[in-house]
Length: 475
Image (cartoon, rainbow, N blue to C red; front, side, top):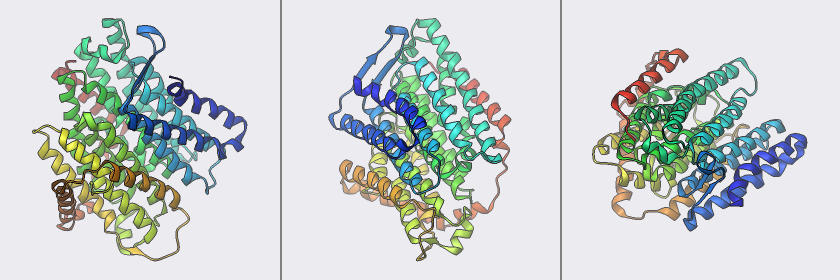
């Protein structure tokens, strides 16, 4: 059980020493991230699980199982990629320390298995993420950070009220007790996690928050931070048929809505952020394998956000005419192909596993979302590569590391069956065909931005919460 505690206490404790001795950031983060990666890989390989209860029925419970291990591995891979991105740049040691603190907070979120402790560590992680988002203290970053933390806290207020209702009914904060709680409690808790995970309509805050942050922060937010609201939903889906159905329904809605928004984007970072909104839906659409899908998406999406920092412009129309330096294009191509689900990449293994777990009513919607994903990412895949000097903002080491994770996962996990390969290639080809058939012209249409206004996001979130209560999310 000591390794389980060290995954949380180690990064948080060592970050204090990094504040006191800034030179330690050259060594400590790499050791911590590598340790998390090694332990999570061992957990996945041996298929072991550990549960640690610290304070009896009302207290803290930690669970290290395969689902948590995949999210821990995602956290380690993304953190390592961001660390390599930051090394040659002029980011202060305190920024490295904040990333280390965030790593520890995320580990705590993925290991927490009781409702109240999960609330505490999610709020801790949100505060650390807020400090990263507002860097380097420009007006737009400060407003983006304030907007992010305000919306997150609104969602967590719903979650906390639901948690109190569960305790009032059952006398325990254990996640399993949600099955004996009042349906309103389940609706409140789920509503709060939908906000935090950037899922469906409560996730309308995500495109602006992720696109306006700096590249390493965007990689952390889209790659791993949104998963702290997703993993509990995956765990809830296993408690009852009603919760499983609702989680799957929210997943399908988010997958389609994210693609619909991404088709109209001409800003490359907003396109990637809307794609995150969609891919979170894929994670929830197949709860039994959602953690593995979260790993494949998190690594690929963080690689994309780090790679696009080397682009000369964020305007896709301008990039279409000017071209992209070939090393940047190569990094984007490999990560995009993984998200599309092409064979030999981790995204292919995850998408095959997801389609094996979806229900019959989900299949046509998720197939359409898969084709839409390929159509959206075709705008990156078919940019013109040019042979020019490597831009200063390009993170070559990060791209190599994260692409290596995707390739190793894809080769190791397979599958190597011809029908599944042909289906994956066919879906990607169909998406490319849709792209060239004229869907790419949708980016010329400017969508109204009212749906991203703070007051409207809160209002729509309340409407979704009310709908969950009316529908009766019965644990």
